[in-house]
Length: 272
Image (cartoon, rainbow, N blue to C red):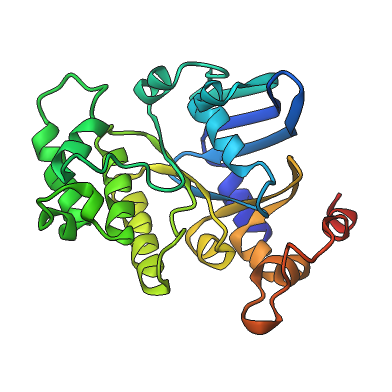
């Protein structure tokens, strides 16, 4: 197990978050000094209950906090050694980071092709058509859909959202709840494609996901958030075998504990 940790942490760090705090409306403290590293070429997952600050972390990286009156007020976010804290979203996309938002956020009254071209809006090269074919390699179902994107199924819309991110030729993709609203069969299919993209394209991924089992079986390393703080981290193997993780995140069926009914301090008391 120690060798696995050393293997992940010895790799070149592509994204580094150092002790950041995020404030909304100049008064609401949401992130409380979190730090994490994402090695180049790896899938890293960020887990935790609703309201823990996972999506806020992704928005801090991608520059989308400004759209919600939020900002990084302390600490730093570095991508390839350069600070990207509070940069504009279009600049961050040009630097190589693309976020797939929770809820897909496709343009429903545009076609699949038009949505894919929208993902390439920061590019000035002439290879967009060939990249669309690459997207169809991973998502052949999309090639058959010629109507408006709003008529796609939930799974197809998620595929389109991921495909659109590939059109930006990113070095890193931020995935926010890719399994939300999908059937178990589609969840398995989408995560299989995510792993294939990572393996074949070498694209680094930071994955926010409620399905902890699926996330940890796809990622090399994981972080757990509680109330705006990182409370636990380790390799996927370590987290899958951790007793607290089993109790609070990995149990299934009728015995699974509900976050709504479970006092959060019980987890924090063990982990912090």
